[in-house]
Image 1: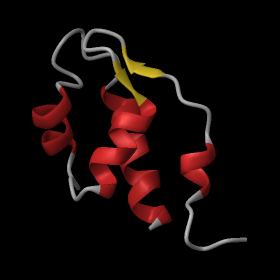
Image 2 (image 1 turned 90 degrees about the horizontal axis):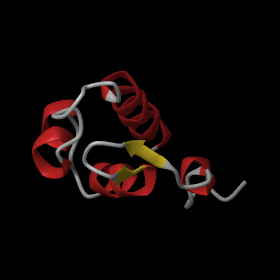
Image 3 (image 1 turned 30 degrees about the vertical axis):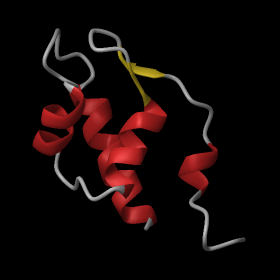
Length: 69
């Protein structure tokens, strides 16, 4: 396995936050750029600021991506 590329980046892209139209890839890009908290992702992308149904999934993506680094 190539350790330079995270398997998380190979997941199909999909819409995570419907209210703010934020894709999975956008969340991962922000994490890779140094955003390491849910609040930081919320501030940068607006995730969780509408109906809040994506909060748990965003937190899971954050955790998985940080663990994958």
